[in-house]
Image 1: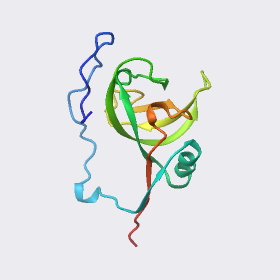
Image 2: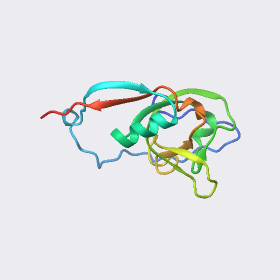
Image 3: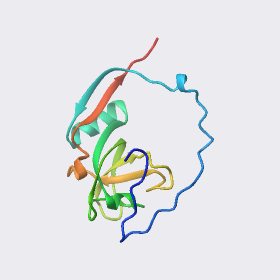
Image 4: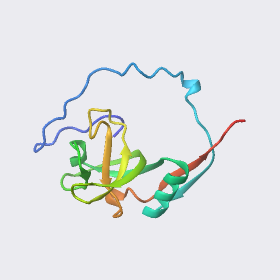
Length: 145
């Protein structure tokens, strides 16, 4: 999606957008770099959960459909709309929705805080929704002593 949202579809309204940059992040680029000593690929719910417990968030990709552009809250499951492409995100945890008892991945997205649940997404867990559970990338950080 190249950092932009796709054109609106006829059956859903255009989401409201904030038209200014956030001033609160002021770390210089050279001090905002991290390196890894190894990288590896995971697949499947249990492997992903174990990696998050041991080493923290993992990187994931998923197939994007029109309905996710208008996601506001709840556990996302693709229902309607055409395929738009792929997108990379960070899975930071998991849970079970208290109202619907639906398992989900907690995902940090890059579409700003006006999208989803303050910039986060809960996506159906355990069924490879939108191919989210294949090709997970994780790594071990390189620590300078």
